[in-house]
Length: 264
Image 1 (cartoon, rainbow, N blue to C red):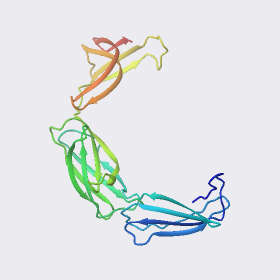
Image 2 (cartoon, rainbow, N blue to C red):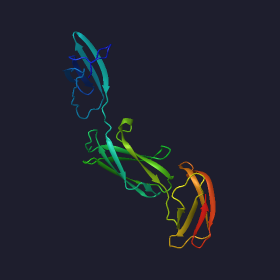
Image 3 (cartoon, rainbow, N blue to C red):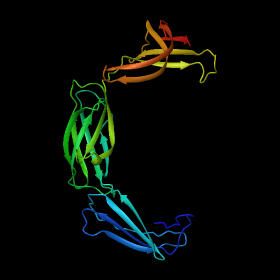
Image 4 (cartoon, one colour):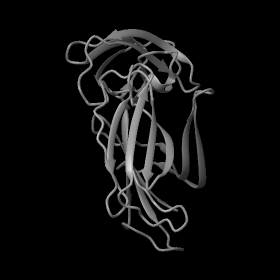
């Protein structure tokens, strides 16, 4: 608390302060009193009860030489707690099984045992695609599995955990994101080798593109396209990549070594 002159804003010493915090679930408010120092400050410590279910209202009364003043404010109690979400992978294919584990801590960073939780997984359109209930162990740990449908749409999915679905304040964060995509082993690899490590404006870049099959033989009679890609974004609704490109150069892999120099 700080006491100051109402006109000059200079600090006032020897102001008697009475402070109290009222919670709806407590019969009597928490009280403290003291006197301001030469800089106008008076510091109070309040021991807050555990398991508070409501926010508090602060009332401060100051008196000096027969004059009094009153100030009011609110005290917000953090009841959401913290959660750490871990998945066995960050990239999945349709039809695979997602393993999830969460560690739940209260505002004092202590494990919260025997706590009912609701797991929700959202797609890119913020639609719930999976919902499940979980309960923490005595160590504050809860786990769940999600059998990813084989016909699910590809894209990024968000994992969120709630304690009370009707109260947005009970959303435990941060949330976790995973990607669902199809990935297949390629038949060949492509390596790019520029003639310099950096270039100045208006310089010509000689880039060698080489293709090799996984069994070691070079790729011949292939087509090469070198393009400057400025942006790449996955379109969830249309299920395709949207790519912004600039100038491009084309060439053919016709040499026996499986490589071809291109100029950009």
